[in-house]
Length: 254
Image 1 (cartoon, one colour):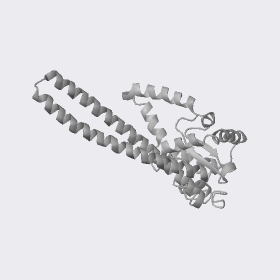
Image 2 (image 1 turned 135 degrees about the vertical axis):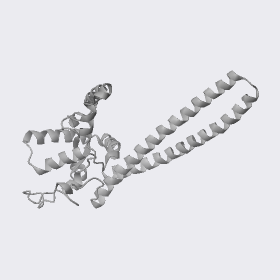
Image 3 (image 1 turned 45 degrees about the vertical axis):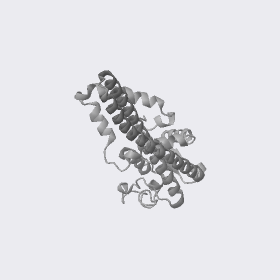
């Protein structure tokens, strides 16, 4: 697994270098277009041709808007690639030093619990700190609840089936982690936020659209993800890396 992450780091770093070149070239093209546009407009203005002037202004506006949109798209891709790089670097760090950028679950420690303290379930260098890949508080809470109490046999079997499916989707899992990384450390309860949004009468059209969108997204998720409530999918990597489970969030699992 370390080779997989190391290869990803090298590939993403190379992609980031290419993106930086494209972004810089695009910025220079915008500057060149502004200077060229000013010169062309000045020349056309000297000819007192209104239609030619309007045509030139239209072309300049369209060209500039295209470059602005392209810049925005490139910057979004760069932000995603940086998040993907951070995800892979974190996995290497976990393998080498057991340090994880995700929460260690210290807030869930309970001295009165039957086994939490004895087995180092929560806190630094704990089981939770090793397997946690949750980017939302809901995900962390659900994972903690799994570790705090015994599960039913059917739940364990369902999770194992989901684990088996997701174990072969490493690239998809990393994409999901990278897209959710923006929420890491946030205290906003996404479930409560979306619930308020859906029930807001002033956003009736948007709420209806979001309900349809969420249902549609759920159908496109791997079947293993839909076996979990709310926003947690567990991916077992112990067979190939010897480090237990890796946990990532998703937004529309059921």
